[in-house]
Length: 81
Length: 381
Image (cartoon, rainbow over all chains, first blue to last red; front, side, top):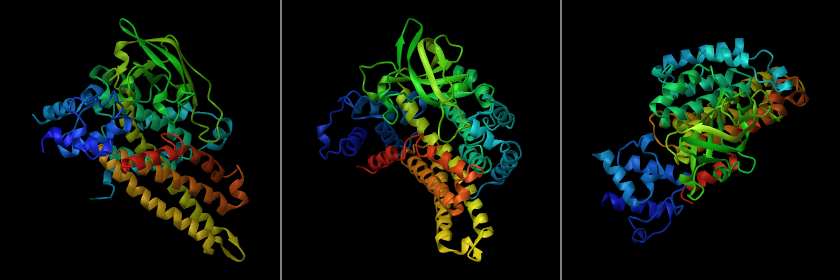
């Protein structure tokens, strides 16, 4: 699975409680739509840091980095670089 | 997995226990009766460097890791009968963690030394008259101006509020955005124009902790007062809650251990019907239940503390620790009164004050009901 697929899969199943991963687009707004809220962001961070063996610092814990699947993937890739 | 305290941690704990018993417990009943926060005791704790523990030496702290800090506050909660004072100190640390984790270098350098040394008292302004559990429904606003922000709103029941020199104020910076991006965190001074603090509010327990209103009336703060970035407030708060839900339960677990010890001693000494009351199953089972909860509480606490020590996310673990320990404490304090009968109900003895103090622990930093909701959601519901 690509990083996009992994992120999309997690958000779809764990936050939207849906089964069809295709229902979530890479550029669909996650923060503005309320899909990622205050508890959701901590759940997502926990998953991302565990899954990709990264530790996201305070400077990067800004809503803009979690706006869409694409911005989340960009963030992960920056840490993996 | 090693659950033993290190020799250093044991020494720190012993030193704190001795300090608290010698310096902090005298006159606690009177302070509780009068609802008095003691600045003198705060300063003693500052001199003892209780607020410096987790902060790097470069910012005036002592550079201990978080597990060591938790073990220290666990010991403080055990030995210090002034639970309100303990909460005041823990509040200071939680404020400091937010600056440490999210502040820029100039904020860390500028704010942390006075915080770690206890020279300035910090408060955290989140709760409002219309938003407690529904935290992010807050109405306090921060309107952006050319080179700063103007804050308007009222915070209430704020720990350390009436005595605070500085406060971290959470306010809405963009009402049009959804929860995650609409709130920011500001560092505010009591000297800032438009900032005022109310008198300590009367309350059932934790009467030595000053809680009150913080009023922001066209309070101007420079742009450099934003902790982290604009719109980062909810994430800062959510992270801070995880640290808070380890540090405060550490104090509660210490209190639970003290209550247990006192109950055991009382049950051995007090006789009824020709035998120590501890030999009656009705009493011994209450005490056994406390002992079980102490053991499980320790596991939950240090499991969560260990995760935070490694800078891991721990929403579930910290929620479980907070809920379990504080509910165990409340039940133990209720049982401690029941075990003592009429004596337990008298204000002359510690059990009555312990019970009043314990109730607050199941309310602040997330009520038991809200935390149960959180745990359910983290369980996938």
